[in-house]
Image (spheres, rainbow, N blue to C red):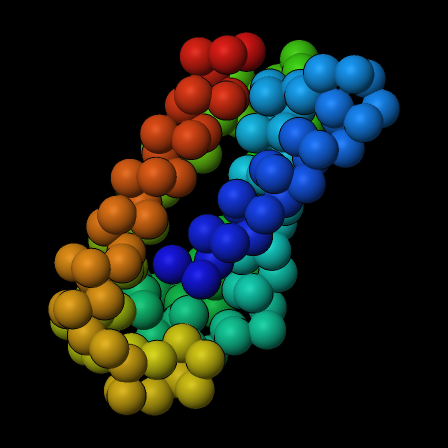
Length: 152
């Protein structure tokens, strides 16, 4: 849930900044900026923690490093896309689909107790999945839908 501090922190800072500049908070901009910063941050983590992320991918999937790098680039592109009004809704739809698909890797990671930061098997396991990852995944999907589709 530590990652969510990036989402919420950016959102709140953007609300304060838009209020200071425009005289009223801009929820649409702030919500999308929060998710954009969050997803770009996680996209770059695919390159910093690539070995641990590759371990998350189910065994039957070939070319693990390709998928780690590819999904990192996708996340960075999605962050940029959320900030472009003409493609925001499409980006949000694709990002929601992406969140559902990568959840498979999260389940695999929890079952194997993968620690992506150390690239070993000392991770928190299924407790993390139930107590943190599933709630976070729901927040990310609802947030993306609300700011990227509903308010758009």
